[in-house]
Amino acid sequence: MTLFACLRCRTALTDDLHEAQLAELPEPVSPSDLQPGDVCPAWVPPGMFAVDPQPFGPPHVPIETDGRMLVSAGPRNTVLINPDDLLVRQLHLDGRRRNGCCGLDGCDGPNLVCSCGAEIATESSDCWTAQVVRLQPLAVVRT
Image (tube, rainbow, N blue to C red; front, side, top):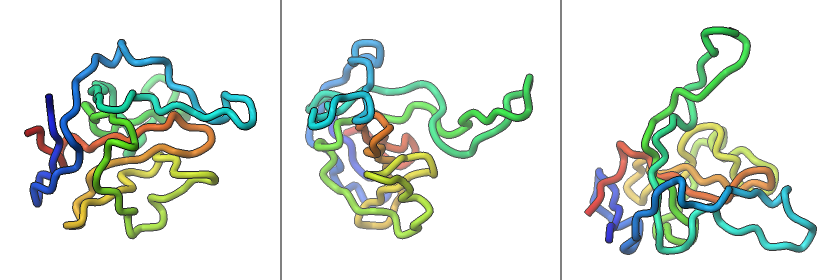
């Protein structure tokens, strides 16, 4: 089992979680994929986490072959957790990080901070996004 804590202040960010392989997770769905009134499940089941090896978030860079389409060049190995498993949830003070119409879209960098001010996670909870929290790999420590 693994507990995640803030690297800066060592505040516990989660309780103990079990690791799952990313390929073992269900396909992510967003509220917009469902019928009105249906409850959208979180991408990661409660009590579990998975590591996403692909880049996520800003900066976004042009694809070399095209130059017009942008792709993420953000951090690799973000830790995916169920939103309900995050113990510390404070919104980033920068309003540009909190975009979204029905929740947080998670497209503009970490939007959650620890009580010490460290940027710890990106929550995606908007109507068109999978419901997930991504812990920033350089801001958290496994204990």
